[in-house]
Amino acid sequence: MKFFGGSKNSKHTAGHIHDTAEPYNRPASQPERNRYSEERPESARYPEQGRSQYPQRESTRYPEPDRPASPLEETRPVPVDEVNVPVEDIPDVDMSGQYERRDRRERREERGFPTWGKIVIVVISVLLILTVLLFAWVLANRRPPEKTPGLNTIDTSDSTDPADTADDTTVDTQDTAVSTEDTTPPTEDTATPATGRRENMYTFLILGKDKVGSNTDAIMIAMLDTENYTLNVASIPRDTYTNTTYKNKRINTLYGSGGVDGLMENIANFIGYRPDGYAIVDLNAFMKLINAIGGVDYYVPRNIDYDDPYQDLHIHFTKGMTHMNGQKAMEYLRFRKGYADADIGRIDAQHEFLMTAAKQILANKSKVPLTTLINIVVNDVKTSLDLGQCTWLAGELLKLDAENIQFMTMPGNYNDFYNGRNYVTVDINGWLDMLNEYLNPFYQQITVANVDLAGRNENGKMIATSGKLR
Image (cartoon, rainbow, N blue to C red; front, side, top):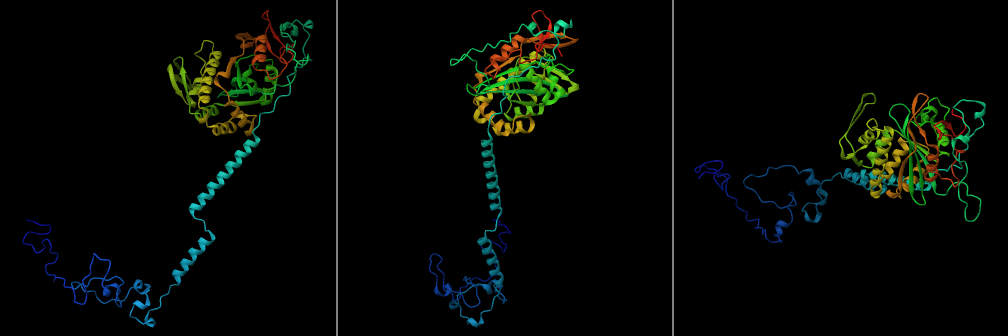
């Protein structure tokens, strides 16, 4: 048999580490230790002079050389009565350093010296306090937007009497075939019609800004009823003719021509009142909003393949259900070339997409990242609403049911031609009916006295409700 380290005849066999070592013989003076008993012999319980406090087996194999005592052995606290050494012979040990370290540690504990854990706790506590204060401030300032006091009034002092000229661009307001009579039924208590604003009605202008220039190719008027919780939204086609003094008459150029003030003034002339608030959403803000809600699951009704190198726009969709993030949603809502009715087809697609998004949001109200959405609106959207008003509006919108949201499009001639250009001309009577039924926050009716609209009369003649085409 072979063993590790040698052959059978080797001196290093099992059980023999050093065959030359003498066997261990216990001295007679050292009694046998009982390893299975807690009691130890009296002689092994206490150390002898100059030895460690733990008894060790005497070794005759490797005798320990004489050496001076180590500092650890010198500084070991040993009961004086247990050592056969006179007290005066015990060496003095300098313990000042140990006591000084202990004193510094005790002083730090007494005065609460901050550790990293304490610093983290303090920072978190400060952040929580600031969050609570911000939340309290938002709640204290949570309020609706200020309401427009009254209906718009059109100045007709500069209109030209049609009897003095044969120019087709001037027309008497009677030629509009639109009644200026207030048809509001009298109240039960009095024969005088109610006037002023309805209590829980709020109106907003929402514009979608194009990537190129300052054109706003999506124009929507919205009215929110916070009593019955309904939301009505009407889109105005981008090529609608407006009776403005600006050279470019299309409604999508009002913001670029006159800024916010010029935009709001001309919109008031178009709908009969000044909206309570506005929001101008660019493409980046729109994509952030869609991404914040986790995208939208939408059914694309047709295959779409379109490339516009000038705008770096590449739109490709396959018919069927798809999940749209912000980028995909932006591409889909900008597409219009493939629709037979161009911008009107795009408006219909926008309405369907927004309705789908509203249903998904309202079906998962508890999961809506409200704070994130409000921050995007405040920081990335040009709006007249402040933080408190945005918070109020977001809370009210989440109280809606999807079946109480309606989208509609301004009635008109979508393929009109005037002064050598293609326009959309408003159906004056149809538009006034839509305004009064869905978008009027006042008790009294909106009439031609409150608007400055340009459209065709029943004879096909281009007219203006103010009496003059500008």
